[in-house]
Length: 276
Image (cartoon, rainbow, N blue to C red):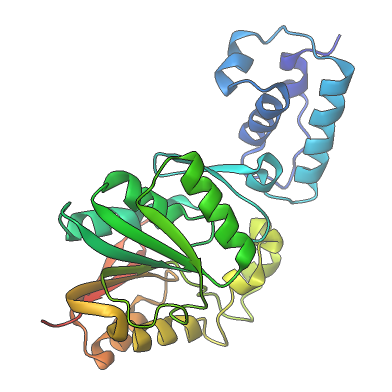
């Protein structure tokens, strides 16, 4: 007899930092139930087809594939987002970017830009929290734009739109009160690229030159052309890049430049205001 309890008691996910959580998420997904259901009905027996699907999902996880890609979903902020292998998986660290943006600007109507939107996570979180804001998310990957559009439609967030654009290329003449971005910021030789979940994520969304700052440099250089006076630029970056990013912002002429720390105490985002 193969029950929920017996499956979860015999885990073989040695390389996962959270084997029990991974297994519960995969089993709940297989059964079309919540994780709470697994704890309420541990004695439930599984059908052969359910066991096969669960074992297939476990095999993918043993091979290192991220749980989010196996499930096709990932939570971010208060949203449940569709994800796919051509986009980064939204991470809790990036919620600091959302928190900071919400605290900086009022809930009155304004224009917001999310560069490199991926799943649309940042753009949709801002659109959800600020119905008066008009949020534009751009990505150079057409599949990512389609995915973000689908997330926006499913979440019924009509104040978010998504456009195919390589950074600012499709935004001529458009200006915003706020530009946010979680761009690629990993150095090309960083050993972490061959470890963990990032092995399965698109390198184009991770790697930015020798020092990891190529895309951040481009964004900082071009952002003033698309910021209204008094507008803000917020950038996520690596835990050890804050000083370099602040220096780039100051050199370009931004004011009120500072960095903010994530829950781990790392300076995870930097921001600056384009002068009035």
